[in-house]
Image (cartoon, rainbow, N blue to C red; front, side, top):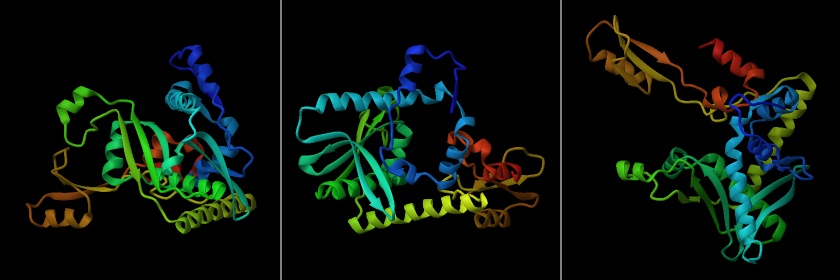
Length: 295
């Protein structure tokens, strides 16, 4: 992996970015890797030396590292909290590992700290966040597997990096009341957690085998690609702007039928957000290239 420095990031910050000591330990795959689509994981492995990132894309990692370092230092002498502990389990022939950020042992509450955006927090509180739910349930299973003790509650402690008091006063409503927000995460049964592990390990193993045999990669799903829904724009001839944008073809056709002639429907394909802005291997991905080619 190569880095550019288009925006003259100071050397001190570059050193901090390069000092990332993350490792999956002595395991075949980490929880982070397990949650990745196999296509992305395998393309990152294949094109590791060809991937080019800019240091500016990595600066948010420093905030996460700083939070974890402060928590670890502040809690190292307390018996009720374990920080930065890597846990292991054998699943379907693979060793899987995961590292928790902070575990309140006395209450059996598993907490993961996330430096994130207000937008992400608001949406997580409204609709949940699938990646966080999967990640924390994996950690809960690993903790039980390694200690024999059951986790009773899962929390994300979100630190909203762009929280602003004036925005709170202006917007109110669902805007977070504080820059630090505790989000309850649904806790699965131990059987559900284990089954999820088995399904993901099997998916990654079969994908690796097929790729080694014929070079094929499984397609990323709409969920993997963070794909937005298609929308249907009702257009009047001679006008650039849509008269109405509707979420389904049926609604667009119904609107068309009850209004004047000279209207037509134009499909606006939903954007794959991850592919367009957050995937390091999009340039090597034939699925994404075909999507762009097909409009």
